[in-house]
Length: 222
Image (cartoon, rainbow, N blue to C red; front, side, top):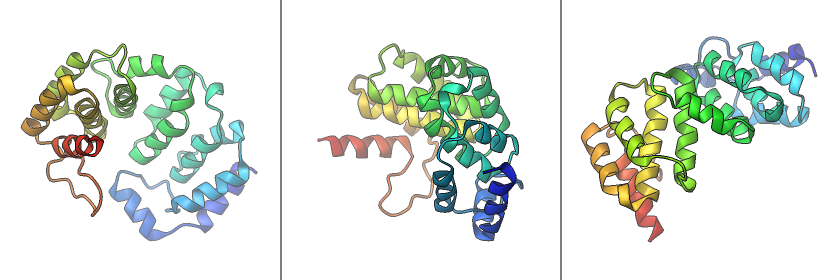
């Protein structure tokens, strides 16, 4: 399958409501508004095609980039290429697919995590760095300085960009959920900062407000 063939299929599946929804949450105009199920179906037909994936990413099209994350081979991307991919995208949903489908399988993910966690790193690389750190915290946090992470969250989250606040907040919640020695401080920071306190939450879902999230997940562990 060629780039143009993929784009033609995506264009035919475009939906204005999906397009409007994507724009509301940060997507630009280079998109067709294709449902996630249809995107996955096209990727499933292609299976793995690393060069096609790179070419699809280069189009800048939202749906093409979703597909690219599903068909590329993570090990064939250099750390520099992944960094450039992160810098080139502004739609958080695409970035989260890059994290789930590329970064988690990338041989240099720890090196990238450390680079992207440096003070002063912003934008989507920072979102990804905090996301990878959240995963480390949830699993064991070996080698992670949790007090220092809490210091940074306390100081930086109030002024961070929204896309970075989201994964910083995830790190805060994961500390409170998984590390009892730091739970009280995580709860106190969450309450005082109040970030996502009023975030609209669908019925049956847990609020992203860290104190509610922490307390609910701890209750489920008992």
